[in-house]
Length: 161
Image 1 (cartoon, rainbow, N blue to C red):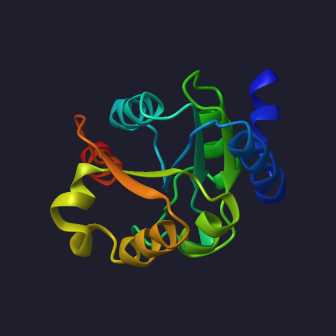
Image 2: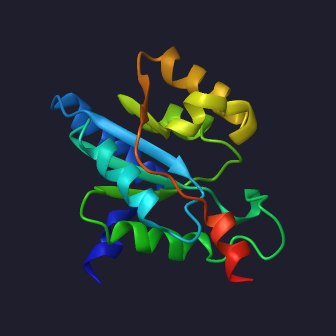
């Protein structure tokens, strides 16, 4: 399975990102749960990939997902594998921590991407975003918001039940 080689450890991704940056490549990072992948996620990744040279996607580990009972629907390894199969994604990592702050420090992406719901009301979506943003800005990176159609995995799951 060719796409599985795109799922890297954090150390492997950090080394590849460092080497890419030294070659002048702009690294982008999208971070999130990405449970029950849908076209809103794909549009977010595609928009982000259009603003950088290589896109890394990091997946929140299962133990830190607080979206209600029986979530995540798919374990982190399966979510990472599915995302790795997307052509717009260069690499995928499974985060080890509750937020992306330490991961951002390890990968040092030039651009940290979030959907525009974070631009509108990050407090309501995930207040950890503010610390993540501070971590990015601290080493000279920047945050960009994608303005694509969004959907909610949680809302879709409620409709299915």
